[in-house]
Image 1 (cartoon, rainbow, N blue to C red):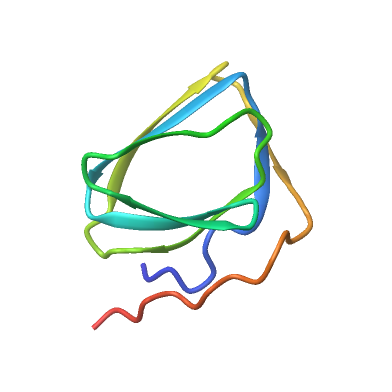
Image 2: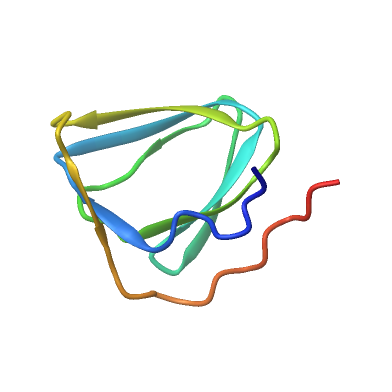
Length: 89
């Protein structure tokens, strides 16, 4: 499914969270900073950071490790404008 809507702005109530990109790429907004995460990258998402997964490749796969396992996701007000996603062909 193409990234037309993304995840929306949110944060997690978690003590620890990392994203390990295993295939493809994804673009996140972390607060007001655009971040490209590519295969082989590991990103630590600090507790409570407001973020938005807004674009990704058709082959994107990632592993997310979060503690505690029963964490909550909370929608938040937009931090900034989101760039348009890359059209899939």
